[in-house]
Length: 116
Length: 112
Image (cartoon, rainbow over all chains, first blue to last red; front, side, top):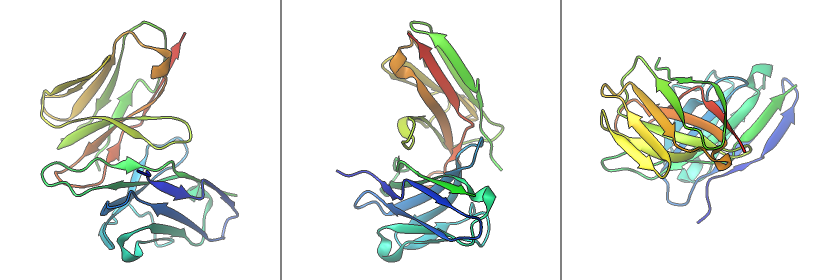
């Protein structure tokens, strides 16, 4: 079974440009999460989709970030316009619905974003 | 805002030694997970502890959840070079599929 995949693995862009990150969750996983780690900091939550709906987007830093999950399958995270402080590693995770105990979140390898 | 502080931040020890990594918070978590992350990969779940005072063992690794569900520890017995990596604790504030709050991480190096 394929794990969570993310594309691209690396992206280098200039300040002010737009970048779109993609995440393909494990097939059948309704829950999809975005996290990111900026330099020297801990991994922080960005948002949570249940199928195509945003369940929790409390971690989104500002309105330059737009996440979508059309059809409840893959998700995209667009940063427009990118700023220097957006540099970091963006992780996607997915999990099955857990009835009594939260499902394990399986993480993708991450996309390393560098904004110059 | 819930925070998880891990200590030590870096640890380098000789093969065969024992070590303990701590994960502390002033907040209560419904469950706490320990992950290990290799370079270029995402975190991989090692264990989940749910009950205060719970102890789980995974071969040479022993995980404990504090009685008040605010802290946790990871103890490794007879460390091996294959244990080298970044260890992360992460807490979940409530039951259900919810966001994880990650700790600051402990980078462990086992010297052969």
